[in-house]
Length: 132
Image (cartoon, rainbow, N blue to C red; front, side, top):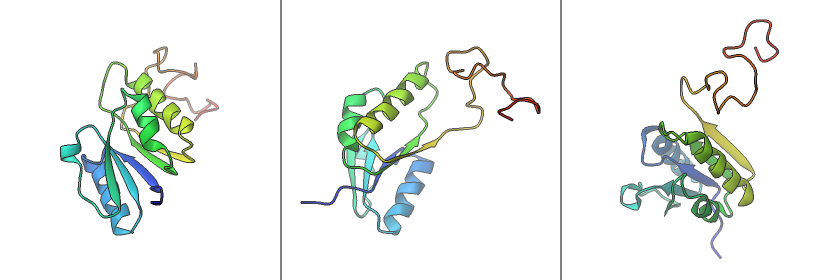
């Protein structure tokens, strides 16, 4: 029986995810590269590509089965990005992933009062705020 991959990597066809996947391959780690287009997946040692997107939590769960660490690159700006990311994280938890590393981007903080503002606290935090 083949050993389960240590890492599940999204964004492996992009700049950051691609560099992470390449470095892990250089270090000898097994990986499952989660891509939207198999034809664009990099050919790396000890890495197998699987097709899924944040819009398909069932496929994401199936693909992450047996993965220990999930490196999740934030999806591009989409009107339902928050739902997509929550679904992907839920899929990872359901698949038994032990650790999730989430990479966001500059300016990703939700606007106060928006659907993504789950804290109810002001943003940016003031110096007297408990989240400062």
